[in-house]
Length: 93
Length: 149
Image (tube, rainbow over all chains, first blue to last red; front, side, top):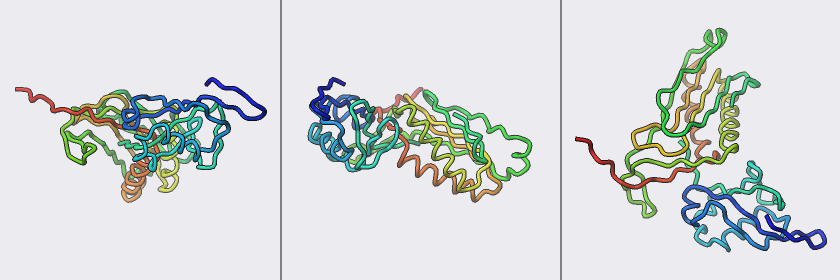
C-alpha cells in the first residue's frame, strides 16, 4: 500500500481481496480503493467499496469484512497495514 | 489441522479437486468403547446450477475458492463449537478447493457420537453454519458433459 502521512492521518490506497462470484462481477480479485483515510471503520469501508464498485450493490448486504483473517464488526477500525477481504456469497458444501 | 484440546478429536483438511473415499476416523480404544454412532455425510456436485436469472442450467462442475488460513480456521472453530454442543467424540471435516466435476464429491463430514441423534444434529447444524460463516466460494463452470458412447 502506498501512503502519505499528514499529522496523525494516513491517506493511501487500500486493496481489498474479493473472491468467487463477486470477483467475477468486478473483474478482479483485488479491489483498489485510492485515497483512503486511515483508520477507517468497516462500515465506512463497505460504503466506499460500493461507491467504487457499484456492481457489488446487490450483494454487499450479504457480505462481511474480514481483517487479518477474522470477521470484524461494523465499527471496527481498519488500519493501513491490515489485510482486508470481502466475504460475500459464500457457499461451502 | 488437528485439535486434542477439547474432549473431541477434531480434524480439518482442505484438498485440491474431488474427494474420493474418505479414510475412516481413527479412534482410541477408550473412544471406540463409547462410540455408538458413526456417520458420514458426502456433499456432491449436482449436474445443474441456478444462474443469475434463476434458471437452472447444466454445469460441467464447480470451481471452489478458499481463503487460507481463514477457511481452515473457521471450519475448525465451528467443528469445535458444535462438537462441544453435542458431546461429539470425534469429527473429521474435509472440503475441496479447485475444480470438482459434477457427480464428484466436494465435502465429506464424518462424526462419531455415542448416540445417533447427536450425530444427525451435529451434521445438520454444522453444515448450516458452514454455509453462513466459512469463506468458501463456488463458481459454476457452465456446460454440458459429453455423453460417452
